[in-house]
Image 1 (cartoon, one colour):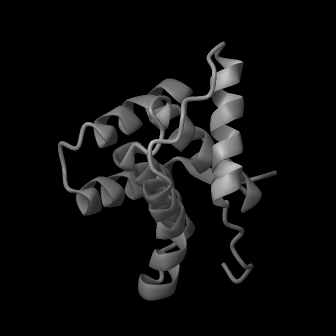
Image 2 (cartoon, rainbow, N blue to C red):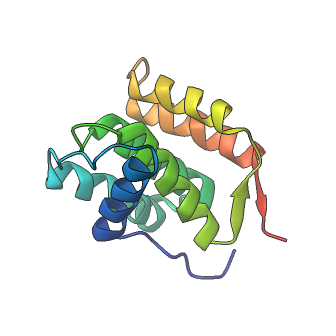
Length: 135
């Protein structure tokens, strides 16, 4: 893929969190740590620059980073899902899986049963098998 990758910003993730929580009838949860959110948001760009991470790995890093860093007091897995979905969408891809399948994977990631690297690699492999270009 030679097209430049579009990345989400911290304010966009905060807005996505607010919209996600409100769509579920909840108030947006307070931000527990801006540093943890910034770390999660920067992981895809760092991995692309330093290790040549593909789009699936970058999407996985974003989702795993938000899920494991827990930057909000509530709604981290939901925010991780929405951020990952939007990230893939703005870069021309969609997830070809049921929301429940994705949610189960994010719950497993958030429970930290594996190292961050192992969780990311397994989730990225799953995304490669379950994403396709738009249209």
